[in-house]
Image (cartoon, rainbow, N blue to C red; front, side, top):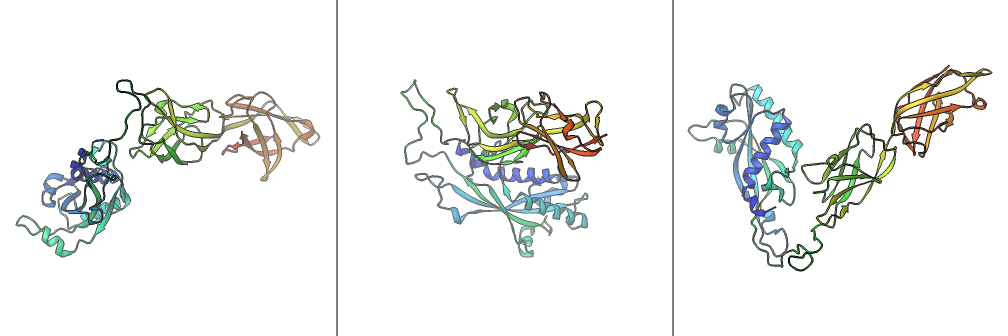
Length: 381
């Protein structure tokens, strides 16, 4: 990204604040401008953001982005938040209620991450921090002292650090882009050594559930690897911050439940694959129902026979599948499939030698060590 785009960062911050606050308050109108102009423009209840002061950030005045570069201009932007009711008044109970909602929306934003579409802010080396300032009567009287102004209760806050920079050539040599002679370049050289995953949530998931991966340098990675299974590129949904990707297994996927090494990959211009560090993700089976497979056979006072478990992520005959029947919270018997299971069904048989008393049992299923959350009831009669 060209750093020259950051020259529009002040306006981009105002636009981002208005968009994010409006989104958190069910698309409530949020205007940017002088509070005196807001009632005419709103035509309904809403909030107004007024940039009343731009200060130079003394703590970062001499902080360059990198050694050998000229320090950018670091700013602190001071805003007023004013609320208006449906009649354009700011000193009513309705306006005061709305002002409180706006304060909470700003507090929830806290660290403001810019989307990748905001070119003026994506070069900011750290997220924008929102903190509240004192807005005493003296400050508000100074700001609303014009002939067409009147005192309005408002809340003051600041946003920092906002960077303004240029594409000035640094004092050191430019970064190497390729390796090889001109016109016959070789391997591409990247500033990053590759993505690194730091967390997965939830760590245990089922097909159809959205899984979030967090890490470093995830930009450009658009494929998810689940063990040896590479999902389609569009299965990865990049987050607007560039440090999060999300994926979702299709509900009818034939992949068996198990613990998998989860990683993200991208295709380099050379056609080679670049892969991140892996994390452990556990795909759990799903049990949709159980039923007897034919009539049970008496063995004295007990019964023996077969039952079928239906669901998903069972895999097949090569997977480790077990079912346990629980009664009063304790396991009475553990069984392996009595015939080759399919990805969605498994049949189990209680032998005559281990016949069970009549009653209602809970079925617990495990596939490759992953236990299904569902434990349906099987009536053994």
